[in-house]
Image (cartoon, rainbow, N blue to C red; front, side, top):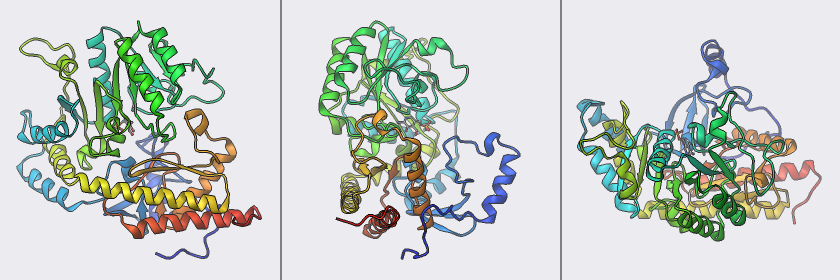
Length: 454
Ligand SMILES: Cc1ncc(COP(=O)(O)O)c(C=O)c1O
């Protein structure tokens, strides 16, 4: 794909008449016009007709390289042929039953076979549920109600993890003792009193707060590379400190890998030396269908074990472990073998290096974070080290909007305030395209700033 010479900074994206018509109808029926707060709009959402591999097509026939992949879910891209075949078979065999199927055992065995600490697993339908059930199990196991979480990190829509998900400089409080900030109007203050926010990559602060509130805490929940909080690599000293203080205070560690399980064959915790008691999973393990899973040490997972009695934590759901999600997840994960991870990692390394080289050449205030198939572009000269560092000023938000628009005009969906990802149908051509478009954005911007490359 060649770049259009007519691309101009700040041009609003071309969104065709069918999307406009759909959004007009949607506004009459959905509050705010959509059914997910996370849908990006500039100025309206782009309606999609279909996806193929790394690309998707809007209802007006425009084609885009998809770096969102439904918020990093579609690691094999759209309409992955083996998933289609598995689902066609499962459709004919039945979509859901009130009885278990053997498919759930196969997917469970595959996942637990990769990660030693996943001795037992339970399926649910979303990452939110996985996080919720992991927290409930930790509460039942420890007899304590509270959690510690990383300021700014996203773990879905369970009240306790929503605390301080969207703190701002106006309310986040001191560096050492971040405030617990409600995420919606009417959030019970009792919830706020049961959550201890920690700053990412601040070992001293975290240890201090965990020791101080150990009496309250069932678990520390952490996404080892929290995407919303900046997709920032954890310092080994931070991980080691969390691990040590959790052990010292008998507080469990929940690794939320709903998004970051795609960081390696064994997930994210293994990559950073974290030894969780529980994991929350979702996204890629469903092969593009709704899924969640809570997994972990057998002694903690026993909280879900009824053995003829009432379990400590009842866990169920009408569609939990439905055979459609199990079939799609099983085949998708079977194709996600060690060579597939190695290839994605190489592509990601190459892309991040090329983006960083372009920044170096043009000396414009951007930086790149991420690992494996994940990356984020920050409007910051120095890569951020935590959520507060990564937080955008109004002028930085403007620059990022320009960047997203520029990419859209060049036929690439780059998430604006979320993590971008690569998928297995991508290759060198896609890496070249992303790097070229970014380089051209920097070059245009440099011209506007009357800057010349070094
Ligand atoms: C780290 C993390 N945890 C939990 C969730 C919630 O998952 P779901 O949207 O499937 O409920 C997400 C979703 O993006 C996530 O990124």
